[in-house]
Length: 83
Image (cartoon, rainbow, N blue to C red; front, side):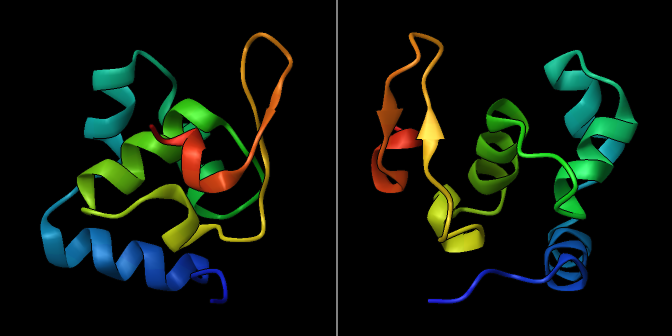
């Protein structure tokens, strides 16, 4: 499966009524960080997880090529990163 393009993520969020600003406020991060994640210039796991959750997907549905690092430093395969 290939990664969703930023325009596809934005379109899906728009169709679902999900605003980047709402995600930012709920997570306590700057809206620019959410925008960077959507545009694939940041790989923030917390933001990616929340975007995927709100879209009813798992992270690898949107960013399948990534491997994720837990705060402990342990690398986790993508399917388990959202768990």
